[in-house]
Image 1 (tube, one colour):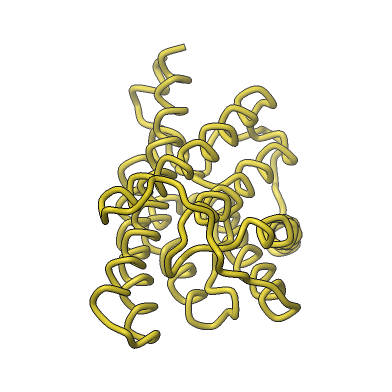
Image 2 (tube, rainbow, N blue to C red):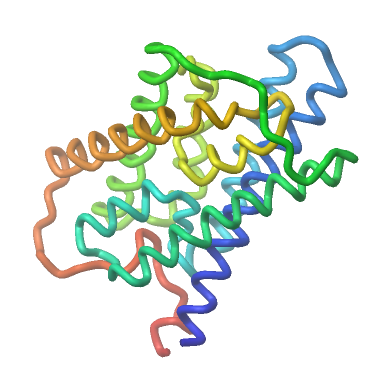
Length: 237
């Protein structure tokens, strides 16, 4: 029970701090410059750095999913139990809402304020498919090749690249999307745009998982608990 609680807290904290970094850096960028390119660059660099650190710190505890799509793929592959997977997704969503509140409050804004930033259209939705598929492919490859220690570098690298080459600026995460719907700032997304974003993220996650199976099919049916190495303290529990 202690191990499970630790994992759930790690998923909550990691998602909360990730969203706080995304939203907070967007607000800071807006206050530093009126140039959208500069704002996006500030936003991307902060997200890349925070995500890398969070994966490195919390990966050995919970696997550093911080993303219902990642957990959902593990559920589909039966690499995580249904009760634990559902709990992961629940705390990720709560963490996303907590993280956006933290960012808003740090900058003197209301904790939650629905965004008016409508993000919609085929190009943007396609961007979410590409960003999420790439993310799940990266995670799948480092898992199947036993190179989980590369996660803190490769996962942020993909997200950072997708910030600039996808029309959606790479949300690629339902929990982050839900959290960002509650800030009326640079990184916000109108609540009415959320369902479509999440739908295309799920499609992208399925596509990324499928490509992983094509290139790196599982050689043994033995299930894995986490995409990153588990801390020795957890192994002995």
